[in-house]
Image (cartoon, rainbow, N blue to C red; front, side, top):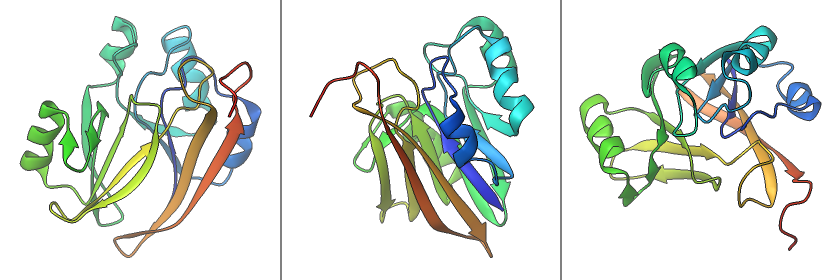
Amino acid sequence: MNIGIISDTHGSFEQEFKDFFKDVDVIWHAGDFGGNGLEFTDSIRDFKKVIGVAGNCDGADVRLEYPLHQFFECEGCKVLMTHIGGFPGHYDYRAYGLIMQYKPDIFVCGHSHILRVMNDKYFNMLVINPGAAGNTGIHVYKTALRMKIENGKPQDMQLLKLARPGGPQV
């Protein structure tokens, strides 16, 4: 299974992301869809199947369509996704409770606009924050990830990294 992972689009899903995700089977969206509510989320869903969660900037219409967290199985991996999550040693208290409850193999979150892919040895899980794909926020680069899951193992992770127009310069 080919997976695209994205977060914090804030109303922007540009052609470069569509090109990067052209061969994925599903997009995991870790919240803050933004844009015109369901009209924007539907534009992504019309492109590919989406499993997503609502973020802190999403309106009531998106929150009715997408829950605050998702727990599902994908090719033998237990996956937990929420918007505000944190990272090993610094999890949001709600995310920590969900991790304790579900014991996922893969934990996906967004919110920070900081790209992170880390192995949490304590919980024996892969922690993924794809950064931010939108044009709003503190990030310098817009990012997205894609990977394969085969035989219960994530592999072949790839990064799309684009300069954010008008963003801070390094």
